[in-house]
Amino acid sequence: METNKKIEKKFDAVKMMREIRDKISSETQNMSFEELKAYLKNQIAESKQKPIGH
Image 1 (cartoon, one colour):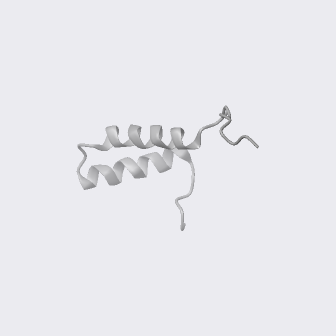
Image 2 (image 1 turned 60 degrees about the vertical axis):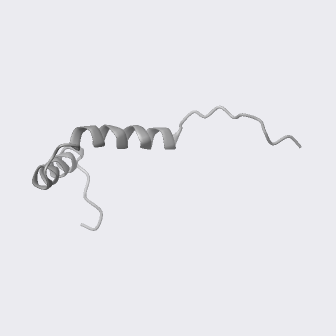
Image 3 (image 1 turned 90 degrees about the vertical axis):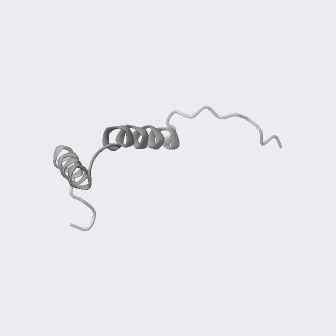
């Protein structure tokens, strides 16, 4: 039984998450706490998704 076969992925969730995290980090790196809160509020409003717990 050979277990070292490389499987080609159609979707790489880890890669996508890292790209999203890096994008958000670069957009928010020099923001104050108040600016960060406004940024997050705006992103949630644009996505039309309800925040978790609401």
